[in-house]
Length: 133
Image 1 (tube, rainbow, N blue to C red):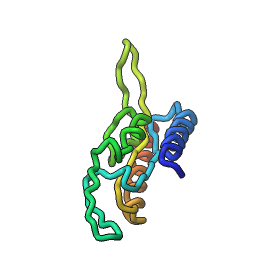
Image 2 (tube, rainbow, N blue to C red; image 1 turned 90 degrees about the horizontal axis):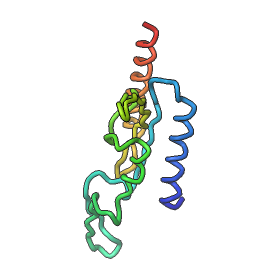
Image 3 (cartoon, rainbow, N blue to C red; image 1 turned 30 degrees about the vertical axis):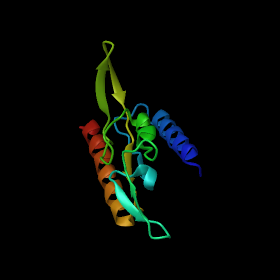
Image 4 (cartoon, rainbow, N blue to C red; image 1 turned 45 degrees about the vertical axis):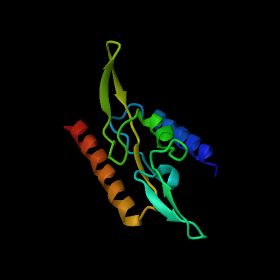
């Protein structure tokens, strides 16, 4: 899938789930992205001819992270954002539902992803428990 199309799909999916969970105080939506466009640190690769190339993670020509974080109000990446936050703007309070966006260049390991999803699930259950008290 073309990078732009994948990013548009992520935004659409986040917005659709946000609409569904509009009255909830948690947003347990997790997105895992991987590849050179989502690197959080610079690294080198070796071409077939043996040439080493430095991939700079904050290069505007390579990095696409900022194109995804727009749907999460610019919140920090690689952290659990399951619990909604309340902000005041224009004399009103607004509840922001932010997806938990996880980025890295190398492929995700099942155990890494499982640990993150478990943490988000525990946060969601904690929010729901607090609402019952």
